[in-house]
Length: 286
Image (cartoon, rainbow, N blue to C red; front, side, top):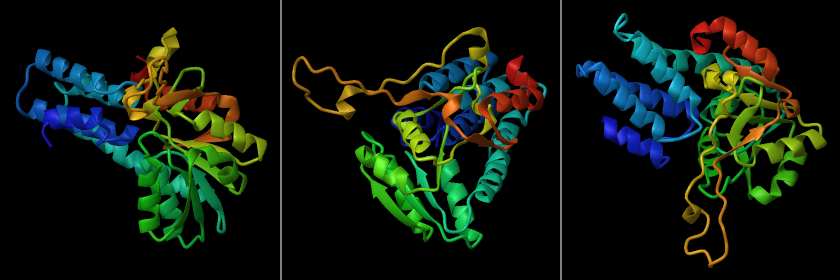
């Protein structure tokens, strides 16, 4: 996939999932570096990748790492990609340990991280079942249902409005993460906050499964993470006059509604994870 194909793939969601987007963007920038692009050209390419989709701090952090280090270290882009691959393995291991034999796992949207955790637990011989929501309007939940069922795990697929029924019968709620703010708030697919409220009502433990590079350092200085607003036509083409369509891709979730966060650094409460991030990756803050 060439540079422009990557940019377009991020825009139209053919490349989706925060980690997949970050890795694809890093590989696209690595192509430019290998072609001998100037620093100005690399900064322009980075800007184009960043603007392809909002609410993607993992993408921004990975590209920032590459731009900062590529002159001193020609392997900087490769090392950024390796971080994501290594983190995937650690998160998968830790997350699978949290799933017990006989559990029903609920999830929302499509998180490749959650997908790997569930499949790993299955490979360990644990008998599990998955409940998931369709995730309108782009139906990313179907990706989750298909991939997990192909791994030999039984899946119950629910319309979004049946989330209460789905969660009430689950033992654990695992979901992804698109951004982490300095005050511990989690930004994830629209609908996540509502489902966290339901999980709390029915005492279902809830964990965000994430690479810690999704932390947004700009929030330390009071800047908010931009919430992507997608096209109204995704919800309703030719909507009647006077009907305004709201189609936010993500929403903010309170740290108080989470049991914990599963990252490559371990399982922590959101506020504690931020402290660990500052120690493990000081360059993210600086």
